[in-house]
Amino acid sequence: MEKQKTTKKIAVLGAGGWGTALSLVLHSKGHNVTLWGSTPDYVELLKKQRENSKYLKGIKIPPDLKITSDIETAQEQTNLIVVAIPTPYVRKTLQPFKNYYISGTPIVSVIKGIENETLMRGSEILRDIFVEPPIALLLGPSHAEEVAMNLPTTVVVTSEDNKLATEIQEIFITEHFRVYTNSDVIGVEIGTSVKNVIAIAAGICDGLGFGDNSKAALITRGLAETTRLGVAMGGQRDTFSGLAGLGDLITTCVSPYGRNRLVGELIAKGKKLSQVLEEMDQIAEGILTTKSVCALAKKYNVEMPITNEIFNVLFEDKDPMKAVKELMARDPKSETEDS
Image: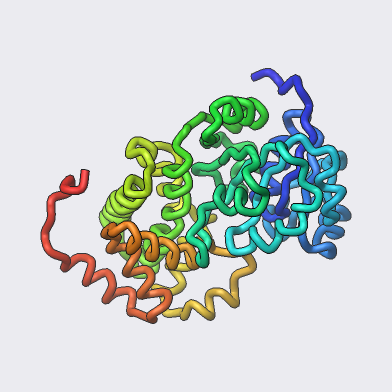
């Protein structure tokens, strides 16, 4: 695959694993990349070690990939902004950037979550902050660890502006990182957000010692309720059988890298949510997203039994085995009755 001919100045906001991995992808295309982190002390450590040892241990950061904690430096003469900040922190973290944002600069969101207070998706939060910027989403089954190691990965870029989607596709695509386009903004964001909730359920399956039958059933029925919600909100049904639906769901439910899956596994083994949170040094988006998805299900009158039980386990201290038994004891139904 040919190297990108037009060099862009790109700011990647968020120095976690995913922000770092995407910075490496963009740098490999010859772009002028600046990785911004919100914590000055950790940013200085990154600059010194040239390795994100907390999130991507063993992956070297090239010396000409800029790293900063200064907002003005990050946005100076930027052609593109990539937002790789966890949903609960997006609004607060990005407010100071409003003073430096140049109207019309495209923003790429890799946010996988739904805000609790507003029930806004990632793209909606960004529009609320920056007042109608050109927005594209880059989402799909893509663990940062594997992307950073140049293992083959495929994602989708989604925008209401087809021209922008194609431009972002060309900026990111490499021989290791394949990018498709998709115009279904709602479907892609719902699929890649709700999958984190289902992944917690997958972890519970693992923690309780269930087998392949259980995991397959969970993924299938989890996809069914994700699709119900997405379609009710205006998403396209086909999206949920694609990379941002089934693809991302499988990755998150089976991978050892999955933080949400790990949360479920630890809870099933007897730990309380408060204990799990104390021990984690990264955020598991599915925990707070569970609250948002339950609220959306109620708003759109959509049945989401797995999500409801995950809410009960996380926030009502329900025994995971009891939740499983109650799911299995639900009234018999047709598999396709909601198609």
